[in-house]
Amino acid sequence: MTPQASTTPTLVFYDGWCSMCIRSAKLFTKLDRNRGLVECIDLRGDDPRIKDSGADVQTLATSLHTQTPEGTLHAGPEAIRQAMKALGKGASVSWTRWFLLRPVVDFCYRIFARNRLRWFATHKCTDDTCTIK
Image (cartoon, rainbow, N blue to C red; front, side, top):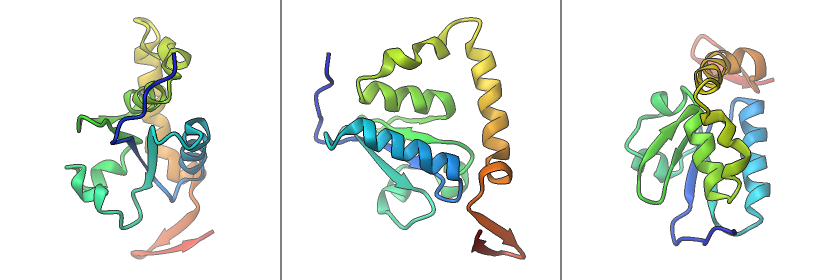
């Protein structure tokens, strides 16, 4: 079943300083196929919806976040599940909710999120100054 486009897409807040995060946003955009089901927003930009999300940039920078059309903010693996659900691909990630696997998925995601800029940064930051690598 194909999801119906709502007037408000699910917003995906990703870290534009993380190459893996950028790839994830590109994947969501590709899966969307211009249907307007999701919209990816670089939290390092100045999009007013970042402030409208109800979370500050520091919070959004801790992991991938989605905001559903109803306004609910989700983080980490649940954010990925919500984005995929909005795209009509929720079944492809439903295994991440399984009783025995969910704690493992959540743990691995926390490790990734904590280290993503060390492993996949597109910027090098020192002394409050950042440059593109």
